[in-house]
Length: 114
Length: 113
Image (cartoon, rainbow over all chains, first blue to last red; front, side, top):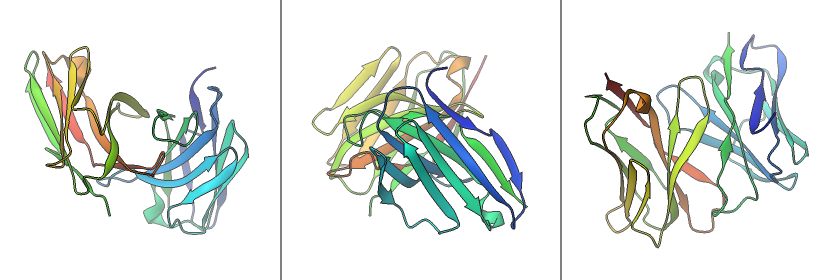
């Protein structure tokens, strides 16, 4: 399988649940990104990892916890979420975290928090 | 703080029309400006990237222009087709902000047969 994949594609969880989103890229990239896309709002960058090191945390609440065990995999661990966290969560990767490198996006995980 | 705005939020046109999507940004100190396409239930696909030193980029029926001084970019789609129906997003990247894209809210385009 090629490109950027995300699982699950859809997730419904209660506010007390703990779940994880997974992103995997088969492009040989070294930078990976988490974005949040809420209804009627612009896409927001959440976290960036470059060569497995976190380089950006865009003031994201601690109930979202990212993990990047290697350059091919990125996780977003979720706990004690709020209904306003319901959104489409997109993962992206690029060769490196620099302006000349195009970001390739996965299809997203549609998250609903009840 | 960079802000990116796209007008209109939605656009419906008959097949075959030429159309223009608009993107404006508040901070002209950008490194590049990208246009993406997003289909329902799918991720984003990069269409065109314009470096700050460039004025425009072309790919097939798509042409994107950049005017840093006025803080504007346009995406021109020639001879629109139903398959062009999607949401189009523009994103600005500031100087020394490698990989950190600031997105507009998008324009939802519908091309009617």
